[in-house]
Amino acid sequence: MPKIGMEPVRRKALIDATISAIGERGSLDVTMSEIAGRAGVSSALAHHYFGAKDELLFATMRHILAELNTDTRRALNMAATPRERVSAVVAVSFSDDQFQAEIIAAWLAFYVEAQKSTELRRLLRIYARRLNSNLMSGLTGILPRTEADRVAEATAALIDGLYIRRALKDGTPNAQSAIALIEDYLETKLNGRSLP
Amino acid sequence: MPKIGMEPVRRKALIDATISAIGERGSLDVTMSEIAGRAGVSSALAHHYFGAKDELLFATMRHILAELNTDTRRALNMAATPRERVSAVVAVSFSDDQFQAEIIAAWLAFYVEAQKSTELRRLLRIYARRLNSNLMSGLTGILPRTEADRVAEATAALIDGLYIRRALKDGTPNAQSAIALIEDYLETKLNGRSLP
DNA sequence: TTTTTTATTGACGCATCAATCAATAAAAAA
DNA sequence: TTTTTTATTGATTGATGCGTCAATAAAAAA
Image 1: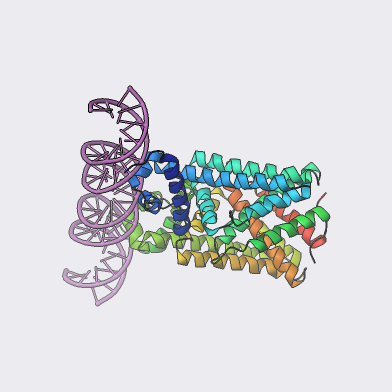
Image 2: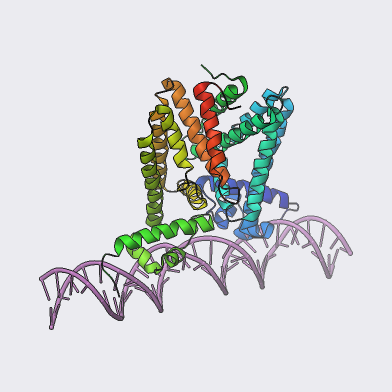
């Protein structure tokens, strides 16, 4: 009993299923059947809408990136000062929507896959550039350019590093301590004074 | 014309081949034949010595970890002050022997694989604990415990973060700027003053 | 009402690999 | 010299999984 206009519904369901499958397996070694099953459809349908597995994975990463971008824009819009902008970018990276076991696993897996796939690498570079630009949008209002560059790079590395290290632990991600760590760094750098 | 005492030679060759194969492919998706071919033997021989592919990969990660540990111990032995100990740990992580495209790719790939394999996760946790302990061995001589803990965690995150971010770039790894970034952080934290 | 488009799947072909095994041969031990 | 151990591989098997295709059916268009 095929209803019309299913395409966007299925695409969304398949992408969500991909994320949760990757989250559970902890890698991109998930079968099309597994993903399709989770989405409640046949693997043939997944191929029908996405063509090849690569494209489904690519669409999934793009979706994750898009969500992060949306959240970041919203947070930046609410930030009043440059200092708040920096904190906003950090906070979004460790927000409940982003800093989930599933998403973290996906990030990691996609980083690895990017070694093979040129397109995926391009996508992740866009993320890196965007993150840098978002951080700089706050930092340039506080520090001289050279210093701002350095702090932006360190902050980005800290974010990625805390993500990857998080993957080794089990249990619920502790976003609070991650944020505290980065904020401590920022405070030191921006005020020249660390937390007591 | 089988010569006697080949086992250690083959094991070493196979592990080296595994690293270079992973480096080229950028992931653990390398076939036993590919690895064996690089080592100049048949895939059957690889199975003969390592049993299953898992075990070869495991042995490879253990080898990488062991090398890092050896290098670190040597560097720590040459460090005279606590401050030098911290720098030594950082320097080794970005030394020519460690900060190579091949090794970086392997680290990344193994991090992902650790999501699936309990043993591998245990191995990587050992690395994390050891890194922390090595950093603390210097930091506790400079900062109060709580502060030292925080700086150790941040430094570890920076190291891992710079590794993962390195994987996105192409060309030769730039260890110098990575070290500079971390040293700048350490200077700020330990002296309360950043580089000009 | 007939035709086309959209949705959907079960079955299948085909390729890839990990792992096994029987076979070969040289060295070492008995 | 016979036997055992060590080294080595080509061929094979069995499983897995991507992608395709023909078939089915409802909705929409003609």
